[in-house]
Image (cartoon, rainbow, N blue to C red):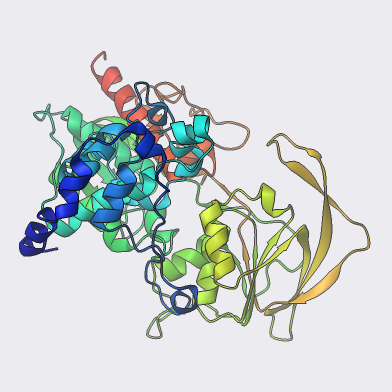
Length: 489
């Protein structure tokens, strides 16, 4: 977006019209602006982003719906406490760069969150429209994305203010959402922050777990570059606990640590045939495609492509996997889920997009066996019908197998996406570190401090599988906890 374009945009007559005071009755009478998107028939043949973003006029129209509530409940629904009415009012006034700057006061990754954060169950679920008017919420996520994208395209990217360096070094383990959020806030406090990443690229699950058609890598890279400008340093291919231990880092002057290494250990069902060629975990499948370029013809280790691909699970990662399979040429791409669509934890938008793209949903089914051909590659999956019983601890109705209902389904690739567990490396490196019965790290939920005083943790290594924005909230709380700890020791 060049300077001439920006000048033209700012001079548009409709801007002044929308800047005028709008009565609340007029605001509530406006319909929610729908995000434009790529046609489903075209997008299954490319890796380009599905959602196309709002235009300036669409963003200002949507922002004009915001009532600027005296008690903005939307902020309470945001895990990183964005001042939502403030940034939206900047958009309504055409002050797009100010909107982006407001976002970055509390959110290190606004362009990321505007794309993948489940606003519909967080800030937008707490919006006055949703709570009181029973109407579609202000499109907070779409507006967040717009402001961040506008700033990036303008070339006028603001860097949050940081305190004068205090000479104290803090290490962040893992460069996913939790680690990046912690690093950003620690830099603002004035600490010398180094992020240690086990993989060869920065970004964690944002890079290896989320496809480009949902979150382009360039978006992540720009926001990481902003952290670099704040003074955060990054080291890749560095496994804390293997490359070197915490005691070595302490000897190098690090006074505190944030552990945000995620939950990269995939869960499997332990059913017959799960070791067949062509049965992947979603972690491996998506990492190979997203981070290693395994879908490219020139790749030395190409991923297996299938005509009939089954993805087991109903979360966002399952949707990412099955939609990736469609883009790799699958003629039949199936979601196999043991509950009904109503119980699916995936975002409604992801389910909607998957259906548009021709994904088949086999709900109330569960695989019980994989069968291989003479070369050891999976060729068939035996599934069993399920029925819903009483609710379990999650509040969802428990699936119950229907006896004698098994039948075969032809598959040549299967992707298991039924959750993840924390990698035990960190805990095994420190026997005194308290863990829960699920293998997650036990922390004080207010400060995110572990049983070892100078170690703090957040994100999936504490929560198990969760959303990126919840991980970022953990990172921010941990940064505040680390600051308080270091100011008192």
